[in-house]
Length: 145
Image (cartoon, rainbow, N blue to C red; front, top):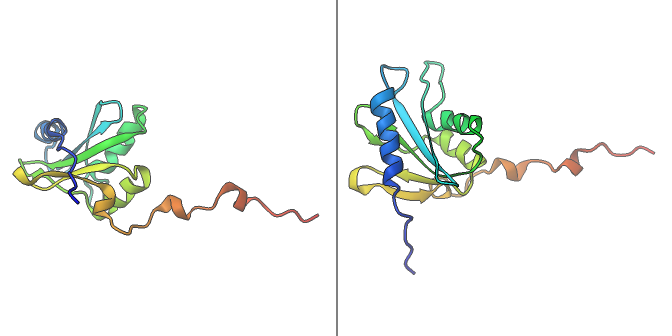
């Protein structure tokens, strides 16, 4: 059986690279992320580094997208400053992105080896937070009459 990887969204990589080149300055902002919405728009963000563990660019992007009324993302990529290229999401980002957008595609790899993979490929046999939440009916108090 032959499977075909989704095409790499070069425009999305360039959008993130442009933000990394023009907005990432100093130690506080070292990564940029870009995501394509379901309707084709591109949302961008940068990380907010802090020694206490500030949010990665991908997580800042989730808030930025929501602030713009975007709740459906198709593909995401992160790019490092100083022309470091595409950087795969860290474990925390992978889990958060999975919980928000289980069908999300992620661009990973370097140089000509970039490829688009599903988020679930990056987290096989993963814990899905929503699968373990109680239904509203299960949380209602039992009648005592």
